[in-house]
Amino acid sequence: MSVAAVTPVDDFGADLRRSLVVWRAQPLLPIISMTFWTLPGLSLDDPIYFVLAILFYVFLGWPGTEREWYRRAFGGEVFPPSEIWPTSRRFFGRFLRLGLLLSPFLVVVLALMCVIGWDTPPAIGFSLVLFFVLDVALTFVTPALTFTTSSARSALSIGVDMLRARWPAAAPYALTPALVVILGTQTVVQPLTGPGGALVASAVAGLFALALKGATVAFYLRHPPAPSG
Image (cartoon, rainbow, N blue to C red):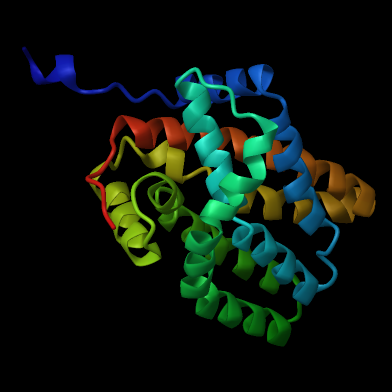
């Protein structure tokens, strides 16, 4: 049997379509995720509140629940509403530790933004570039923390190694990062339409980000690394 016959085929477009099919079968997933991503959009004018909202999202464990929801759905399982809170609680500690590992980066970004000026074009451009780099690096870290290991440090190592080993097949999954989609849409749309329009744009971007997460989960599950601690 040839190597090509046993090597999984990666198709970013097909993975996105699989992600959207899950929404049709289990619409509660996009509804809850859109709500989580829209709430921080209410706080762009207050950098402290905005960072706290993002940290609340991460610490709650919801990123793990989103990915576990997709994993079950891809396997033909229904994710019952009664499992949402227990699953999020199970991932709470993992993502709390990941957030703490990344907190020095967030503190530096927040401090620089405050010095430069939160609403100035240089600050906006600076933050988008930094979050783009961070989100690309974390492409497979969150799936690793969800499916492979409970250790935030191991997840960082697994995720970065997988990104490097699977490049360029992983490129479309890494170069369409969720944070840039959300932050970029808000900063571009709000000056044109005001907070109301930016809120709608944030919700739409949150749904797009969720579709990207589903595609990334499909990619990760095709190339599972060895289990870790």
